[in-house]
Each structure stands twice: as structure tokens, then as C-alpha cells.
Length: 222
Ligand SMILES: Nc1ncnc2c1ncn2[C@@H]1O[C@H](COP(=O)(O)OP(=O)(O)O)[C@@H](O)[C@H]1O
Ligand SMILES: [Mg+2]
Image (cartoon, rainbow, N blue to C red; front, side, top):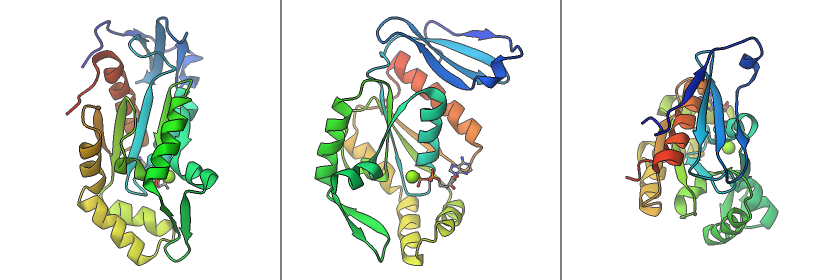
């Protein structure tokens, strides 16, 4: 859906293609959101959410592309980043399972830590982790990344995951485990399911448009 104030499209000129996206403006007054599409600079007014309050969660089965998308939003769009894995290590709320090569996490402790981190957010921020689907966090939107089983298996094999761990993750993906959990926990919050077996550029553009639709229209809360 188009934002009510519309957007302005500026023709490309020599220096602009180096800009890949970002935001400018003050925390509460009118600010502008810009990114490149088809070699044109798209500028959209960004009024509804102040930069300081916009919080986006990204979840999905391991290997679906959460870190890659979060890094894009962080480096190109100026989002702050809160990583579940880093917090688990920092606060010692997981027990390392050396056979499965993963943390067994106390989810309620993780929720408390994340809520505290989110309370201290001072700029638009992305919160990323596969356990976010297990809890409800105060966010403005949540993205569930998905992937075809064949591609997911390839990605997980590259990580040298055990056969058992790969099978478990493929099962979760096929059963839409994360999506079901998110739909149960995040009622009333815009949810976006995004397949990542597509070009990174297409995915990022889709997400940017969706973020804008939340900022302007509140997004689809189904
Ligand atoms: N859209 C995409 N196109 C191609 N490769 C991708 C895409 N998204 C993720 N990947 C690749 O898949 C692998 C897993 O991505 P990653 O972001 O680490 O997943 P997660 O954080 O969900 O575990 C990485 O090698 C990453 O480069
Ligand atoms: Mg990751």
C-alpha cells in the first residue's frame, strides 16, 4: 500500500548510486527514509514512528537468513542490532551442549534480558534470533524468514551441523514451527513471512517497503 503522503522519486545522478539506503531527520519531527530502486533514489517521508521507538524482530529456523538480513538493516539502513545469541553468552542464560553444538536456553530468562535491552533502545533497532518466536516481545513488527528444505539443508550442511540437527531443523521448517509460534505469541503485531530463496536485493527491498507500511498504516496485524 502506498503511504498517504506518497513518495518522491529523484532521477539518478553520478554520486547517488553509492548511497544504498538510510534515514535522515530528527527523532520526533518529520524525517525521511531513502533507498535505491531501479537506479533511482526513492525518498519517503517517515512520520508515524520516531526513529527512537521503532523495533523490528526477525526470527526463523537456523539458516533461513536472519543474520544476513539483520546485518543489511544495520549497515545500510542504520538500524541498531540486538542479537539473541550475544545476549545468551553475555548473561550466561544458556548451557552449552557440546554434542548438539548449541545452547540450551532458559527462555524466560532470555525474555527478561531482551525486555530490558528493548526498554533501553534509543534508535530504530532490529532484534534477531530463532528463539524470539517462543516469547512475546514489545516490537512494532516481526519477520519470519523461511527457506525451501533443499536450500536450507545445503546451508546447514555448510555449517557442519550433525545429521540429527539438520533433520530437526528441516522438520521445524516444514511444520512452520516458527510461524505458528509467532502467530500465537504476537497477536495484534504486524507479522511478515519472507522466503529467502530469492535474491538478497529483492528480499531487502520487500522488507523496506513493509517497514514503511507499518510506519504509515500500522501494517497488517493478522
Ligand atoms: N537471500 C539469500 N540469498 C543467498 N544466500 C543467503 C540468503 N539469505 C541467507 N543466505 C545464506 O544462508 C546462510 C545462512 O544465513 P544466516 O543469515 O547466517 O542464517 P541465520 O542467521 O538465520 O542462521 C549464509 O551463508 C547466508 O549467506
Ligand atoms: Mg544467525
